[in-house]
Structure formats: C-alpha cells, structure tokens
Image (cartoon, rainbow, N blue to C red; front, side):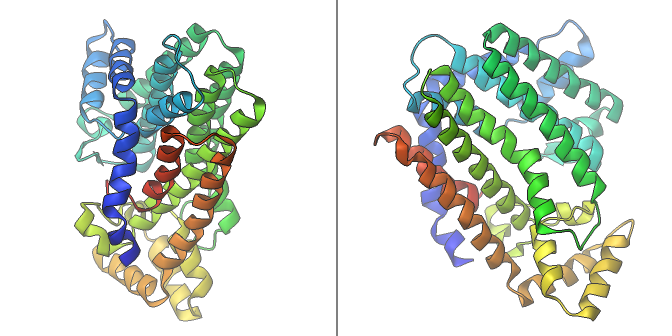
Length: 337
C-alpha cells in the first residue's frame, strides 16, 4: 500500500484544484441547495438543516461545474442549478441507504434515521428527490430531464440488486460491477454529461464526458469498498469494516473467495451467514485478505478504470480544466477523505 501513501499529497491537490477552480459557483450551489430544501413543515426543515450541516465532498456537484467549465459554459446559472440537483439526488440515495443498511453514522455524525426514525428519513429522501425533479423541469431541457430521471431509476434498481445478493460470498464479479455501475457510476456519468449538455457541444464531447464520469465512478466505488478492508489506512482517518458488519459483498470478498482453499471458503460462508458479525470475525477476514494480497489486486483492477477515464479526455483541447479532471482520476482511487 506504499503507492497510496506516496500519492497522498498529489491526490488531495487534484480534488482541491477542482474545488478552487469553481469555488464561486460552488458557493452559489450550496445556497441553491439550502433554498430548495426550505420548508414550512418544522420537521422537514430540521432534518434538512441537519443533513446540510453534515457537509460532504460535493464531488458530484463539482464534476458538473468542472465539466461545464471544460466545455466553455459561461452564460447563466444552469450549471449551478443542475449541480445542486445532482448533489440532492446523491443525498437522497444516502438517506435511503442508511435506512436499508441500518446505518448509524454518516460523515462522523449520527444518521438521520438514528436521530429521528426510519419513516421520517425515507420521506425526507423522497422530499429531496421531488425537489430535484422540480429543478429538472425548471431547467427546461428534455435531454437533461431524460438523463437525470433515468439515472434516478437506475440507482434504485442498483440498490435492489445489491439487496438481492446480500451475503452471497460467491457473487460473480460481473454482478458486483453491475451493482456499483448502477448505484454509483451512473450518477457520476450523469454529473459530467450534464455539464456537456449545458454547453451545447457535439455528441462526441457529451459521450466522452459521460464515459469519463462512469469510469471515475467505478474507480471511486472500488476504492471505497477496498478501504473497508484495508486496516493499514486507519492513518487516513477512514473507518474500516462497515461493509463487512452490514453483510455487504464487495470486490475484496469476491476476489478472496476466488483464491482461498475449501476450508477457508467454509469459514467465509459461515461468517457471512451470521446475523451479527463480530471483531474476531473481521480479524479472520483481514488475515485472509493479507495472505492473498487482495487489496493490491483490487487497486490493480481499479487502475483499469482510471486509465479509461483519463484516456476519454484526449478529445478535449489542453487546458487547466482538462488537467484537473484528468488528475482527479487518481484522487478517486487513493483518496484519504
């Protein structure tokens, strides 16, 4: 994992370069989110305020703003409105995720469902999605409406597919990729393509940015799933084991199952068949993951998607914006926050 450590400073720079390049737009995006979540219903306002205060990287909003800037968008505020829309879709999925996974901590704070309850959290997630659709209609582009509504549908289907395969340690890698493509990569792809749509560029530029976003999203999710089993990355302030304790089957477990012997497979199956897994179970899994060098293999697979994302930007003229998006692919693999 020396590669991750070596890249730490470079990786952080790529994210902050993107953030700094659209800082004025991001401030307006945050204001747009707050205004759109305003409500006369006291509980709705309390819960949305709490959610906003938890913060977040705003990576999907940044991708919309950065892609629009790359394509030369400079007129009006459509990029701000749609960056807010993309971010709210993401927020809604997180709220629903926490209910499904019975999550209690998000971004270092208690989840909405823990502070209030599952029923309220689901409804607030629905409220965010309804606000998103209002913003899509306000934008006035049928192309944008079709893209983002389709994306929302695919995310929901990805969630159901993951539930369907929960605890399935012999899951095919193909199934895993289908899950994360729907759950994560689709919204990344939409975020980047929206920026191109706003700019009235040719279809090839739209397709290139969509392809970039999709592969960036795949890299991001593979890295996130790998961090869950990388105890060495505690130094980055990243909690480990969350997916394991929730019984989610992700790439490290899939690759591990392919390599271990029959006795180890039996142990792995027994552990994931438990209703509640403990720290001793986790230590056994970590031991096997280290034995078979699973972490390194996960990052090698993610590197493939990094290359695809990076190469998709070749059709754009050299610019600061292009360099920032290209460097961001490494951030998605080896980020430390």
